[in-house]
Image 1 (cartoon, rainbow, N blue to C red):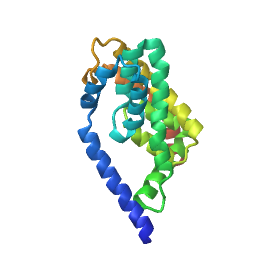
Image 2: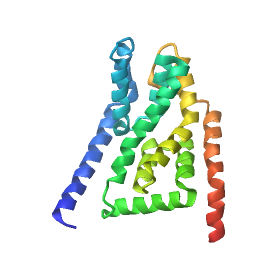
Image 3: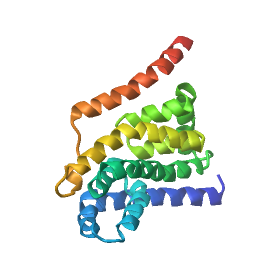
Amino acid sequence: MSRLPRARHAAVVCGLVALVALALLASPSAVLGHVRALLASPWFPLVLLALYLARPFLAWPITVLSALCGYQYGFLVGLPLALCGAVATSLLPYYAARSLSPDWPLVGRFRDGSARFFDAAGGLRGVVAARLAPTPAEAISGAAGAARVPVGVFALGTAIGELPWTVAAVAVGVGLDSFTATAVHFDPRLAVAIAALGVALLAGPAYAVWRRR
């Protein structure tokens, strides 16, 4: 490996370490506590946009911002807004993973594993199933980007897979008297039911892989 790729590799590692540290310091509860003061501001849409852009770097759950949309705008406006935000905020790690060099050993293994999953499950089915599972959003976006899932397929799969979670989160936000990140939680039975849909989607591809063995 030449000096330039090594320097880039080191820069990426340092950047990831810095982002982890930032995520630990900038918790949703701490940041959104200050955002509450801006809910009545005419600048709030720009604040919300900034939160969606920053979210992947802070590793916040998408559902927290979906609930904020429901709290601020109600269900009819909040739902499509939150769903668009969920897709848009997922594109950042998708493109970041897509741009990484496969020559780096860890990146190469990650790309190979991701490609095997999406080859077996299918691009759209794989993204939808992964989004339905309670899996960290950045891991799914990164895997799809590394596997070169077409961006249109990724965006559609993200919208479909995030829809149940977004509906639930927006509904939670609508029902809050005062918005706090800690108040955004779901009935465990709902989470299990949504995850079960993802498992059911993968049953066919999993059986096909088993038969080939």
